[in-house]
Length: 216
Image (cartoon, rainbow, N blue to C red; front, top):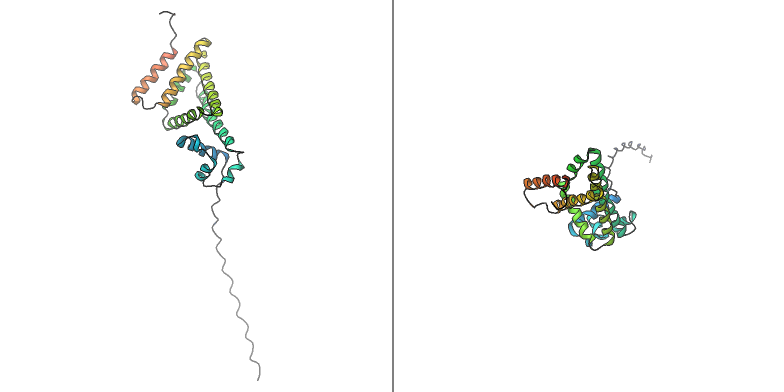
């Protein structure tokens, strides 16, 4: 029986090009600053005892191991928290004020408004209150706080000396004004907005007035 003719196979259809898979969103790589910000927020909301590696890893949705890419241990992180706070609340702030103004009277009028600057002032006050509470039980935090207070007092004293006050009197006036600023930032609900503004203007006037002769 003769063999049946072999039919050629049909040509293969060209494969349809597959659509490229959408690239997955790259997971954000955390920086040391991210950990510092998270630690600061936990400090403000819950206190220093809750600033732990496991708590922060949960807040940032990462493993604990990623913490050690940036910090040796918890104390290293806490040191960075204090450094960041001092840099923002003291060093950078002083530089911004000096760039904006040059006359010492204008600088005094500017610096005394810091506790009244809206949400930024409220946020700064919450962080400072948390750090002051922490400093009551931790020498490292106390040292950072003492250094910040001394730097701020020194800045105020410089302004009063630029106005012509003797060194001792400039230091006393600096302490009075700085104490007032801290009090306003930590007691924001003492008086209406109008009352607080009037108090601010009164304090600014008082600290610039020369003292009369002793005994008067």
